[in-house]
Amino acid sequence: MTDYARGDYPREIQKIFQEIEQALSGAIGPAADMILRDYIEQWQRNGPVVAARIVELTTALVEEIGDPETAQEFISRVEKKC
Image 1 (cartoon, rainbow, N blue to C red):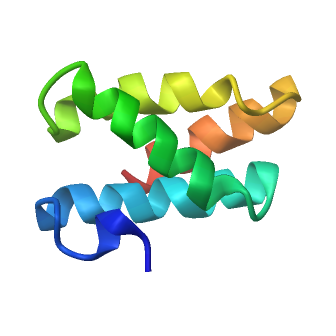
Image 2 (cartoon, rainbow, N blue to C red):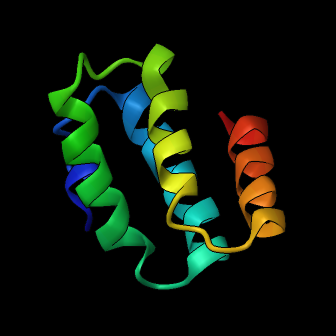
């Protein structure tokens, strides 16, 4: 179970993180969980853990996706779910 699914975050944020992980897994594969955890740690250091800042996190994660088309699919999927 990932750290963010354990209850360390508000339920709304946990759900968003899970949606991001699913979308990222579709884009980059099984390493998504580990990469997302690293990015969440960095993201937390830069400000409060609030839904209004999720775009900062997803924008940073796009850098991990090598293909522009796949990156756009990731963004679209996250925007649709969150």
